[in-house]
Image 1: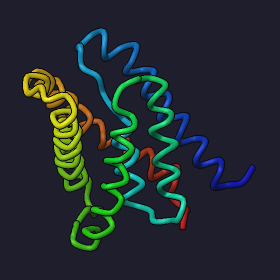
Image 2 (image 1 turned 90 degrees about the vertical axis):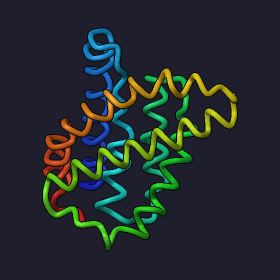
Image 3 (image 1 turned 135 degrees about the horizontal axis):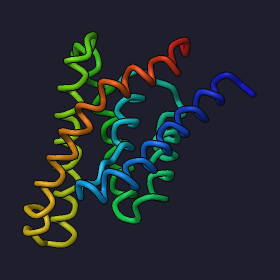
Image 4 (image 1 turned 90 degrees about the horizontal axis):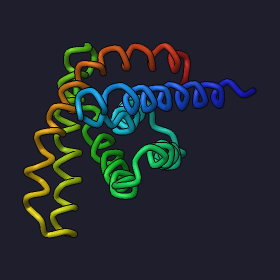
Amino acid sequence: MNKGLKKVFITLLIYLGLELITGVLVVPTLGVALNFSIFFCLYFCLNYTFPAMPYMLLSIQYFHSFFSSTDWAVETLIALLFIFLIKFFKDVLRLDNIKNKVIFTFFSYLIWYFLRYTIHLIVQKDFNFILDHFYYSFISIFIISLVSIFLFKMLEKVWQDHV
């Protein structure tokens, strides 16, 4: 098997494992849905630039659609917007230590959910939806930001020799 394809396969296994664990343990226990597809999109946008990036993000969102029937198309659009934003601001960002990466992850999730709820507001014209879901989104953003410390290290080990 090709070395790059093996890394993609391992990454998808990690992602599917996280989605299964959070779907079985975290959601019933805390009542908070953790969306790891956003983290994987951020990781690849920050660390790699290759022509197949939009297709890789689409495949991540496609696998996310197995676990969530809502918003995967909207989140794919937002992922593509993040590709362009991160591409422009990549040189300005100082993400050489883990603290900066966690802070960046936190604010990226805030922007991501803001864009997601703005699109919901435009489509559904229901402001109460945003207020009801913001509390749970903030909890999930905080949890994923803390977990991102370990996820960054894990993905860096998988993708360490990728050019």
